Length: 417
Image (cartoon, rainbow, N blue to C red; front, side, top):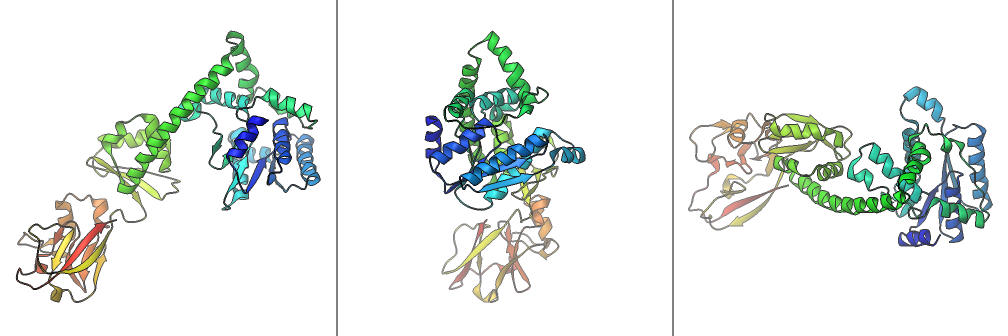
């Protein structure tokens, strides 16, 4: 178990939670942590699928933990009953229940790692599982040694090594007979597909691991680029349409980092050729994004907070610049002796923009400047008392144009945020 020890030592934690069934992998994992006197507890889910066998598995781990004074966490779920009520895939639902349980145990505590007994044979099976499901690069890269708080110290250890270790150290375990049932996809790969492939190519496992390693490192490079892309999109609050032409794997990972489901990508790509203001609604987005709206050459990320916001700073200066910017207003201090505030929802208010002779509404002024409708609603307008001074980034109210002979000016500098 030297390889496993090395992996564990690379990832120290204040506490480990071991995901244990009563199988040989889990029992060796338990004794590995016990031998190293690491701080750990054990989590077990009893799905009640195998009658007395399920109860015996739980009882074995419970008694083992009691014997060695190891904290034990147990979750009992009648998975068969839930499947009848809710439907779905048995193994997928079991996995969901299991990892929800783990997350509850970790809660918000820091420096705690969940540890599973996934080994090298599991890794090879996972490769074929994802290959047959057309899962792409992320799936072919396989399981990670450490990812999202889950540590897998046996990933480079073969199943035969684990069994030999258990036998040499007289570690007891229980066999799950359902692992021999080929009706389950993973079992069929392990029991039928891989043995047949080995008859054709005896080194198939080694070659799969080599290919998986290549996929893994390629995937890491893609993820790094995707992270940069997602941060850029998040900060600017829009996705340039031209960037949708990038490699699909890169797009998938970038969208995942924005909590946008990959299944929506075809609809999002179609927005590139859609009319302005067409949109794709997003669901279950933990970052709060509600929809993507197409306008000209961009897809705007819309959430509950305003898509456009400004802050402003004030300073007294003694001269006017030679060139003016719509992000800087110069005002007569005597005209704005009240408090300056930004307000939203003033689309119907009218004023005469600098450079014009007739009044226009805020909405019409924003529209003339190419501001899309979904941004106009939130666009802030600067007021003093009940007088509209201007629209940040767009135009100053002509009534607030200062004289050129004033001894000083109030400089209002806007910053988009």
